[in-house]
Length: 184
Image (cartoon, rainbow, N blue to C red; front, side):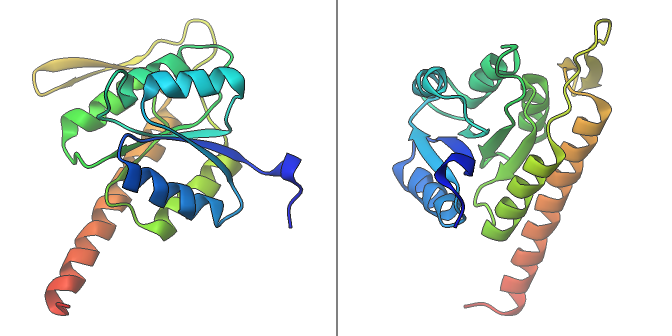
């Protein structure tokens, strides 16, 4: 068993009690220390008490949504090293671009796959977070859907996020196909 001081602390920010409890249970079963906040404001209060090793946040929440929370974390020099993972049921390009603009490190689509979520969580802790920190680095400007987006991530982060998003979509398509072939 891992010493309590060596365990990794993950903050979940989720306004749906069931979703928060399910994610908390999944992560705690894998020896993570987990706290849950109902919105971004409550999460920032918990972060001031103790900086987590990672934040999982829903996007649509009252008071402070997941994009705003991610921006607060990634624009704070004391917190920008904290990986932020967005949890969303929105599979649209605009949501993905907003996540990239907010500086999110990764996306998980709801309903999330437990094995995929756990393997990606471990991967983030092994890979670390690669932020643009050198002076003179400018956010990447992207034109999409008639709007300009400013993405404050480096190319490796963008590629990792896009590949992970693609992988999530492929896994979801496989699951749907399997369910069509073998209905329950």
